Length: 616
Image (tube, rainbow, N blue to C red; front, side, top):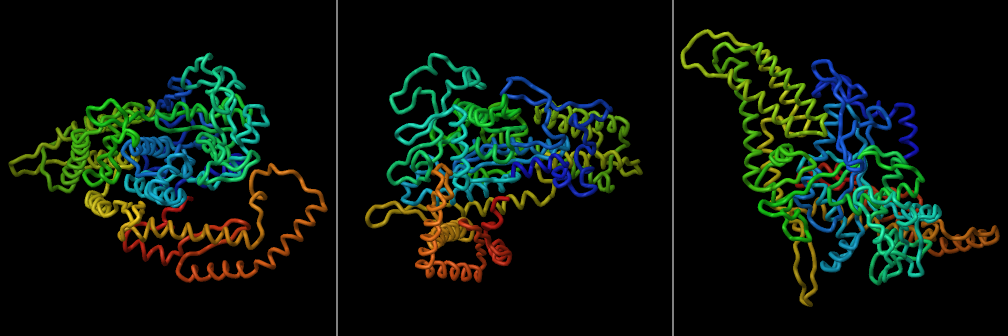
C-alpha cells in the first residue's frame, strides 16, 4: 500500500480519487483550495498553524504532498468498553480532521491500528474465561459502534496488530540489522536506547544517568524497551527467529504506519498520555528502521478529560470513568461534540452535567435562531426594518474570524464564539412587532447567515436536520438494551460470558463467523500442508535444491493423505455461502464478508452488522 500511495502521489491520482463530486467543494466554509490553507474573506492568505508537540511550538502546516495529509492515529486496546476519555480524544481529532477537509480543502488519509493482543487483553480474557481473540473481537466491534454513535468518521484504513505479525517481525529484524536492537537468550528483543544517543527524548528530557542504569532482567539497561516478548505458558504466540512470542506495545504502530506511509508521515495523533513513552518510542523505532533524520512531522496531543472536582484523568485503571453508552443515555452526540468544541483540543476538559447542559444551551440557541430567521424569511415573523448593511458586515467579519480561529491551531472555542456573536447581533434585528403593518423584509441577508451557520455546523460534524434529536434518542434507547457482556458463573463457579439476545445479530454474529472462519483456515492450511514457518519471519536458513525437492514431495504426500479435510473445508465454505457468509480463500489466508441480502435483513432488525463494520 505504501508503494501504491507513492505512485498515486507522484501522479496526483490520489488527490483526484479522494476529491468530492463536481460542485460539492463549494458547499464548504470556503470553496478555494490554495496550498497555504485557504484565503480569508478580505483577500489575505490565511496560513494554517498547528502546535507541534515535537518542536513544542506552533508551526505552519507544510504537507509532503500538496493538499493531501497522511495521518496516523493510535487506536484502542480492545479489552473493555470505551469511556469518555477515549471519546473526547477521538471526537476532538475528528473535528480537526473535518476542519482540514471542509475548511482548508485538505484530503486526509487516516490509518488507525486496533491493538488486539496485549497484556491487558490476556489478563481480562483469563478473568472472563474466554480466548483473547474472542474478547478483542467483541470489544473491537463495540468500539466501532461507539464511534459511529458519536459520529466520528471511520479511518481510511483500520488495521489489527494480529493481522500484521510477519511484517512486525521483519521490521524488528531490520532494526537489529541496523544496530539499534538486540535479542537475548530468553527470546526477548529490546531496543537499544544508547545506540541513538541524544536523539531519544523528543517529548521528555531523559536523564543520562538513568539511561546507563543496568537492569535486573535480561535487558542491558532498564530504559531499553521491548520489541518482542517471549511467550509465556497459556498465552497466544507467533513464530519468530528469536522463538515463539508476541510484539511489544510500541512496535505495532511503527510497523503499520511505516507499511502504509513509508518514512514520510505528516500527522501523528493521540492523547497527551501517549506522548511518553509510546510516541517517543515510535519515533525511535521508525528513525532506526528508516535510517532517517526525522519521522513524523507533526505530533498532535489531546488534553485529558477529568470528572468535575477530580485532578486525575479519566481511566479504567483508576475506575473513575463513564462509558460512552452511559453518556448517550443522558445526552446526545451533538451535545458532547459541542462540549468538545467549547475548549481547545490541547487543554484538559472537566466533564459534568452542568458543562454538558451548557453545551446543549449553545446548540439550542443556534437552533432557535435558525427557526426564527427561517420564519422571518417566510413572512411568518413580523419585524421592523433591519440594518441589512450591518448584518452583511457582521457576516463577512464572522467568516474571517472563524477562518482565522481555525487556522490558529484549530481554535474551536474562538470559532464557535464568533458564530454565537453573529447570532447575537442577528437576533437583535429580529425584534417582533405587536402592531399590524406592512414592514419591509430583508430575506437575503438572513438566508446567507443561516446558510453559513449550517455550513459551519456541517464542517465540524454537528447535524443540521431537524429530526436529529429524535434520531439520537432512538439510538439512546437502543444503547440501553446493549449492555454488551453479561457475566455469570456455572455450577463449578467458573466465570462465563455471553451476549444478550438484542446484540446477537451484530457482535455475536461477527465473533462466531470470525472464529469459525479462523478455525476453518487452520484446518485448511493443515490439509494443504502449509508450514507456519513459511509465512513467518523469513529468518530460517535457505534450503538446498535437494532439500527443496524432498520438501515438495513430502508436502504432496501429506496433501493426498489430508484430502478429506480439504473437501470438508470446501463443503463448509459452500454451506456458509448459502446462508449469506461468503468466504474467500487466498493462498494460506481466508477472509469473509456478509452477503448484502443478509446484511440488509439484519440491519433492519437491530444493530449494524459485521459487514457494515469491516475495515476499508
